[in-house]
Image (cartoon, rainbow, N blue to C red; front, side, top):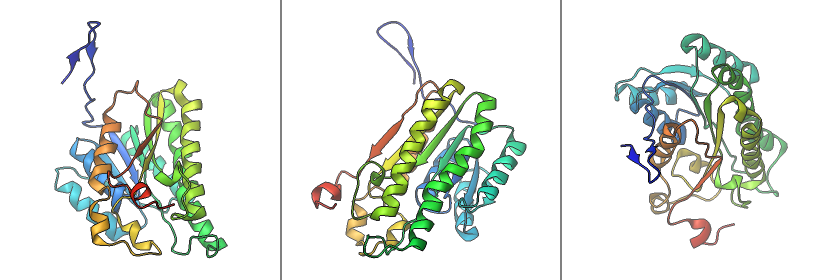
Length: 263
């Protein structure tokens, strides 16, 4: 509810998202899935993208359960032509795009310098960094035309702090994503476009299954959960368009990077 500030001005409430349009990549699982459900629950029209049709179907069912009908666009974000085609179809269908949540990301098991190979490096960078670039490049013209838009680049704790645990490919890609996100704000603020690098610590999502060392159920229980990030994405989307959260670093209270001294 809006309040009155001491200077007599009305303090803004979170904005109404009803009928606005969001595109979520990596929407089949984890953070992307949770973000898509939260945005749909808030009344947004959501476009779901991911590589696995069966996973997108799971998210589709969750969104139908909250009373919305999502649009499904299967997509490999590492393919620039596919990305451009999906962005074009979104604009043709809705004539706008208000929020983009770029959550597609992977890591490889063989990730340390002693193990990572060229194929593994390329696969991580192609999806985590190049894929985000292709998406941003394809949607910025839409947002420029409408003179507003929010891009949420789902980076990582590894995008702001170097860690041996995540490996050099993922760490480099996520650092690049953070820098790319800020460069959007530098150039596109004059067009009313905002970009947030969302940098979560450990989140209990399926990407953990690709860790070299198995994560226990007890460890997962105290991590951030997908719904925590979904609510964070919703909060960012609801902020007034005059507000730009350039970077948001969020971690579990029981942050193993601190409590266990993991580097």
